[in-house]
Amino acid sequence: MGVAITLRGLTHTYRTSDGPLTVLGGLDLDVADGGYAAVTGPSGAGKTTLLSLLGGLEHPQSGRVEVGGQDLTGLSGDELAAYRRATVGFVFQHFGLMETLTAAQNVELAGTLNRSSPTERRARALELLDAVGLAERAGHRPSRLSGGERQRVAIARALVNRPELLLADEPTGNLDDDAAAMVIDLLEKVRGEHGCTLVLVTHNRHLAERADQRVPLDRGHLIPAVV
Image (cartoon, rainbow, N blue to C red; front, top):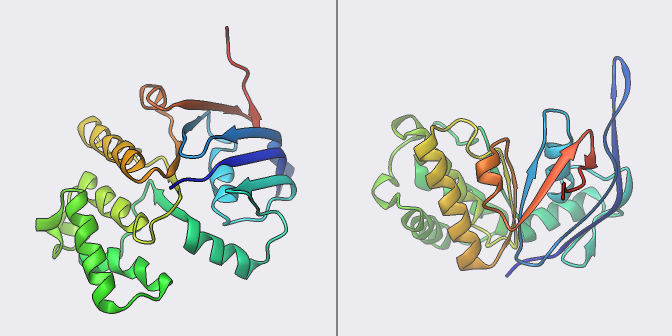
C-alpha cells in the first residue's frame, strides 16, 4: 500500500520582515508508488515546507501537489484534514510525545482520529509497540525512555491509521549514531513490510544514500545530478 507523488511547478513564499522569502521555486518532482525518497539540502532549502505541503499541513500557493492521484491544491481545510487522517503518517525530529501519557497511551491517542473503539485502539497500540520492539515499555512515560525509544514510539504512533504515505522530518536529528541507525532501519523495514511511500528529510548524507531516490534541494530548487 503506497501512493505516487507528482509535483509540478510547486512554488511557496513566506512573508518576512525583510520581504518575501521564496522557499520553493517551481519545483517538479515524481516519487513512485511505494518509493523511498530522501530530501537533503542546507537550512532554508525548502525541505520542511515540502513535507508540510505533501502532508496537507499547508496549502500550496502555486503549482500542483498530487498524492495517490488526488490533487491537494484546491482542497478545503476540512478536506485536507480528512486526507491527513486517511493517508499520511508523520514522524518529527522532536518526537512530540505527551509527557503525562504512557507510550501505549501516546500511540492510542493518534487512533482517536479514525473513531475506532477504545478496545481497538489499545490493541492496535500494543501491536505496533511490539512491532517496534517496545512491548515491555508500553507502560512507561517518555521521561523513562531513551531518545531512540521515544522516536520508535513516535513511529508506532505514525502507523496507527495505516498510512499510505510516511513523512519523516529529520527523525534522527536528536539521536546518537547507534540510535539513528536503528530508527532508519525501522523506517525502512516499515516501508518494506507495509509498502507505504516514504519521504525522509535528513542532513545526513550517508542516511540519504540508503534511499532509492535522492532529492537534493537548494533554495527551493532541485539540484541537477552531477554526472
